[in-house]
Length: 284
Image (cartoon, rainbow, N blue to C red; front, side, top):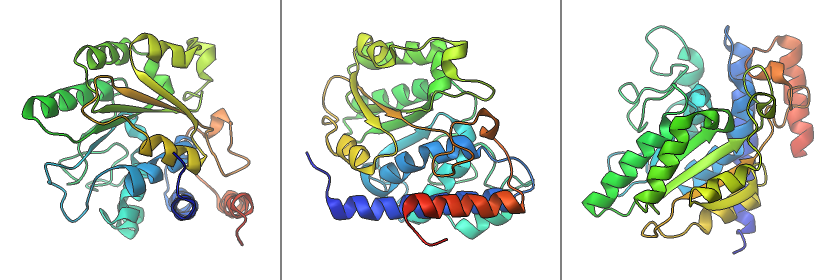
């Protein structure tokens, strides 16, 4: 299956816009933003919320909607912005209130504060277990929607993830999709320095999952992966392993452990926008 070229161009432009919005927030917010991981998952979230997921901001309780769980809850602001660009939230309000006392837009997502968010998350290693429960519930009710869970590769060091992986296959949950942001970095180190994960794809295959490996910054590949998913009635869950880079799009952030989280001073802010424009072939 070949992705539609116009759709890929549309999504690529949205990814550029979203990166600009992330950089803008990081520049105005007084505290640290998880900017490195946000930039690594930008293309994936654009692909999901603007192409792959069956969701509608005007009908957020539709029982036929797909469910999305952000297991790597520290990437919440990235999800907020992707959803805002789809019409769920107001971007200006995110910028104005993010991380402040009483704000609906906390550093981790809260479904009570934000209708349209399916799951409160933040404690790493738990999202896939919740997704298994939601997918199993859908099967029991005879519903055909998908449950999509985005994980960071660092959290897949935790045993709870693999218990959920075993359960997902055992219950034959073809309606369950795990999207792994495989940027190979943790907060203070690279993943392979802490826990040897390779051969990574083989681990998911050994647990009985259908595995798709892609470049998580190639919008063609993202669209192809989402368009070629097995039907939700199939009997094996799918793992999309997306190879990414933290800080993608901003040269001085890419692959730098120190940019797991941070803030931008005036000089960094200007340079980040210039980098981004250059890397997308745009005018700064």
